[in-house]
Figure 1 (cartoon, rainbow, N blue to C red):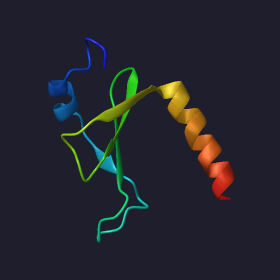
Figure 2: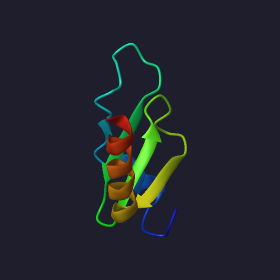
Figure 3: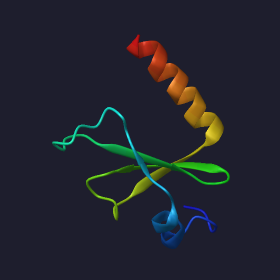
Length: 70
């Protein structure tokens, strides 16, 4: 976490649940974007730890995941 990304900032973000997450629970991922960072967390533990990556790294991951999933 950097000085600009505090726990308060984390709570204020607009989180989106993965479209692959079902209503019955299980392995759920949520993401939120801020000016320079993509935040990733476990939706079952919203107050728990979260991962932060650059938008460039996130874009690369999404491209890789899409290629592997097809």
